[in-house]
Length: 95
Length: 480
Image (cartoon, rainbow over all chains, first blue to last red; front, side, top):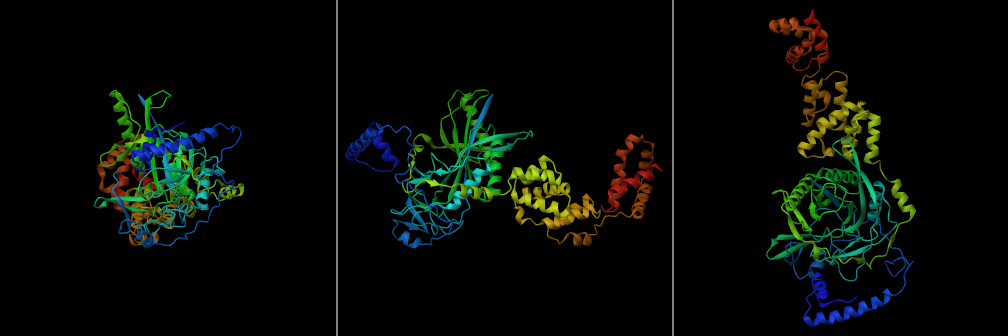
């Protein structure tokens, strides 16, 4: 399977990445070479092998339901590009 | 003729103290962003750690709907871009949800029941909130809600009308309230509903193109939104058009749905397993502990109420729908020892009042103790149905306790035969024409005519005479 430059543009748009034509071409080459590797892996017979959701064969640890975080809004908002009345401000998004 | 095919996706906010992947508080109504930690903000290098309580609640729900529990469940990333989702993806469950296929039973208007299959229920995190109108050219973002645990419950498209959809939603609401896993408050967004609606010619077994109505926030609006959407789709097909698959919003003011965005692109969520989270494996002891902690559920309670209190299937269904109402009724029925009367009063007066005021039974002015006192006074003939109503209204207005109200309003029922006889004599003396008519009438007409005299006697006694005694004495005196 290989991608076209339209695929790259569509994925970039979904991720809100602004790629130049040159970057699009370069990304296309890189992604296609990764997909080539995936194609190679697809050749392996995995019949009877259960899909693996995570490379580490471990179980997730759960935590108890307790509030452990304190309010650090001022620190977080000090590094935000813009904040007002406690809200983070971003360019307007219209639904 | 068309038939509607409806499936619901219900999002339920779980009432944990902390968020699903961080130790931030989920408390409602805090100052903006004071409950948004590094994890909720999606800062680089942080790791989510799932909340055990959220799993406990999800498993309880699964057990309550007789579902398969996913002993191994996996978190996936659902990728989309929106400012109130700082990571650029929502952690959700895709291929292996915590709750697999289950079922609930809904009651239909004609008295029959129908089983609705639940496809799955999965855990995910809620997004933050955007404020679009408060800043010039900017959108404000509050991330307090980001990371609040949600259980998304997906039904099979087996609902065939807006009424069935509402009945299903009410059953889900009833179950989550009984389990106490969410406050289920639709107006505040703790329970939200997306409705997938399509239509097809009756008898056809292929599915039409569906639209999804997002975030409908009351039972009434779910019914109206679905009906409006069904009619819109019928009109399109009748005009020879085609329904487009899209997301729509319901506008309750105009009672119409309108297009939100085309789903083709928005739907490309590029799910993949979240590498930050390992598979969650629940052992048998975790699940059996959840099972042991299950409360009595609505269906079981309904059967018990029918049996213990001798009330009808319909009455029991109404009374158990809300856990707090069910508790209140049981309290009244147990204290007064009168199941049937308690059911009549709770359904006829208490629920009617709550429906009108929109209040909660837990804050209701008339306590279960007061209502059972009132019923005791009906039982011992101190009150008749008319004076009992007066006392109930006084209780609603917080005018005091039952006996004090009866005393101060002079409502004690007159059962003294002598006193009633005196009034009956007066009425007979004052209405010679009616008396003559009555006596001349054939016996089968007299019963109906007696009503006039009963009314007069009750009026003279200011509603306090015992109606049975009045009837008896009147018929005796009139015939004699």
